Length: 412
Image (cartoon, rainbow, N blue to C red; front, side, top):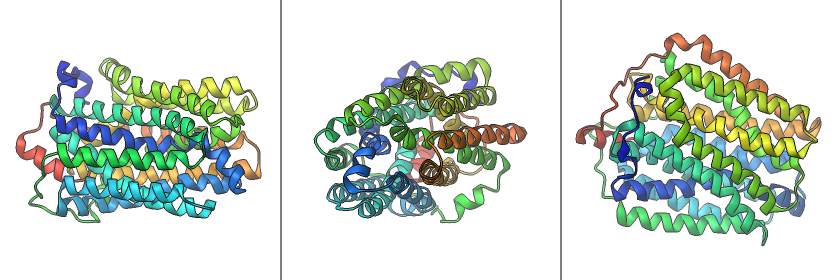
């Protein structure tokens, strides 16, 4: 990896105001991933839903997000990054508000799907926009993006817990309000982005998976997300904590560790040990945490500590793998990222559904075994395909204006 030998430039925080506007909106967008964690038991109890039915909130959200990744390049290459970001934000505002107004678990699941569509349009284009506009090169841009992801995932459960103490509807309405603010920030602070000369096809991300290196990383991420979303979606039920704020604090700790590891730990480990060895170690450690939680599933202290500590491994892994996706194949970065995101989010959707079904039919330890085994198989996939992980985009320097324009107009 080129970035393993490249220090993150000291100007990380000296970014154009447009980058900070997109980063703020990204934080709010990523809050939607963990926002529902603290209110899952409340939703299940008040709407008379089973664990499996409740976890469909993740499945519909992640499934549509993944499928829509095939469309984001087509949309953004025809309308430009700014209009795509704005459309995504509007959809999130509308469907988050509708979810808060729902009267049944089925309605929430359906509206979460619409939320996922808006989320895919936003998060895909946000990464491309930050990469294209940030100063200090791609490494700094990805760290900013992963920091936004971590901060959003960390604050999402906290906000969800605070608002959930009032009503399970509160987090949904809160997201709608915050996303409306983010919409205003994008409209006023992000300059108009031109349409690219070359339009992206819907099939481009699928064809990109023909590259063995990209396919290896995507397959690893598909399996790794079985662990990620088992931890995120099923742990609230295994903990059996009825207080939304207490659940929110647990996942706030998890997300905070994820954010810190993304920004402060991942670059240092990567420079010292290299990409594949660090990812291998993080996958192994995460699998151990999940299997320990399976063994001690009735010990709340183990579940709480394990969940929070896992954030460190996930933060390191997310940052390094995101950069690897950008560099490992000869296709445009935006197309590579869309292909990778399509595969990994589908993995998350299946994982959330499977965790709910296993927890309902068997016992609370079975979802964690599924997650741990999935991560270990992902580790094997990574090792078996590591010879294909050769850097193609080896350019740690900032993008030229032309490249920045092309990347920004794409869908990352």
